[in-house]
Image 1 (cartoon, rainbow, N blue to C red):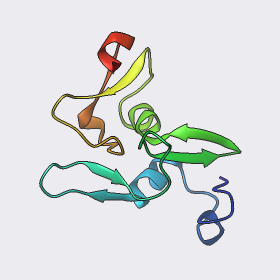
Image 2 (cartoon, helix red, strand yellow; image 1 turned 120 degrees about the vertical axis):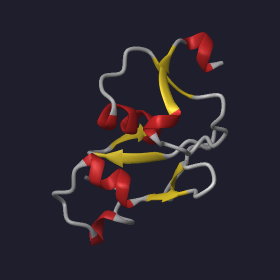
Image 3 (cartoon, rainbow, N blue to C red; image 1 turned 45 degrees about the vertical axis):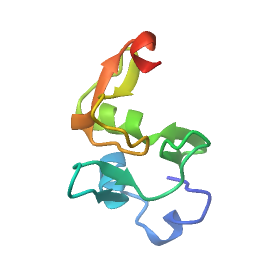
Image 4 (spheres, rainbow, N blue to C red; image 1 turned 45 degrees about the horizontal axis):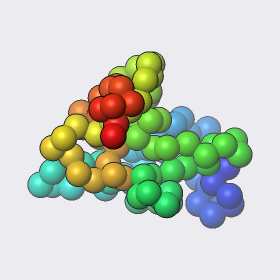
Length: 99
């Protein structure tokens, strides 16, 4: 895993994606959102670089905890945190759902 040398230099290289997601989350006790504590993109979504490719954290979370992605990964209406990646707050929707 490569996090541009900023955080991964202190972590074991054998961590799985699921372990990384859990390690860098902060759980909001009120909303139960899993808040990404590292880098975010210009729209506010959590992002992480793995093997020189940038991934959106909520998409990785859905894939790791729920399964394959068919369309767009959307936040449920009651979740307003863009950097939330709690799989219970996500669903595989359509482009129209994502708008």
